[in-house]
Image (cartoon, rainbow, N blue to C red):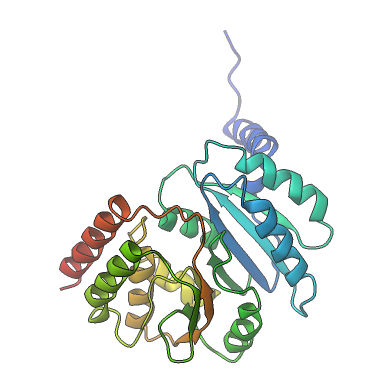
Length: 265
């Protein structure tokens, strides 16, 4: 018979075992800005994304960390991120976080809520929004904005390389559907959004969406809390290899927004 152990000893051993197996799950030390990058099967694209992001962040006045959330990848995404983290950690630290619940919203939520930085946010691995956008974003956040989101449709924005026709048509329909819900926001779906920690946490605890409609609900919750959202026009370039599937993900996104409308009616 295995001798019984006291609860405190058992828990202590379990925590130490988890720390050895999953060091990325430990609470990260605070920095000025955490950049979350959700990743699903991004082993090919993520190295260039991380190198460019590290190079940019290393030259800024604020301290920062990159957090890659591996959303159940079946390729070498996690191994690639760990290797690059070892190579660049002395310049800008890179943390790897796992998220077994599928969906971009679930991955973003996992990355955002697991940190302690004053400012945090996310962008997609395709770097469709220029990294330089972070400079003005941080300035606006430090001046009191609760959220700063990139926009492909705000006045002054440009599209360097457009999406294919199917995605543009679907995107237009999605904007029509969400326009009455998230008032005053021209582009809810651009994958570049950054937040002040307290405002974000207050909104996130109310969010339930885990898929591509996550952005809509988060912005809605922020507006309901009377948080100030700044929409920033950008020069946007369509990613050559997006993980968004126009039919499957499009139908799911529409269904999620309709359900959100019913729930808050």
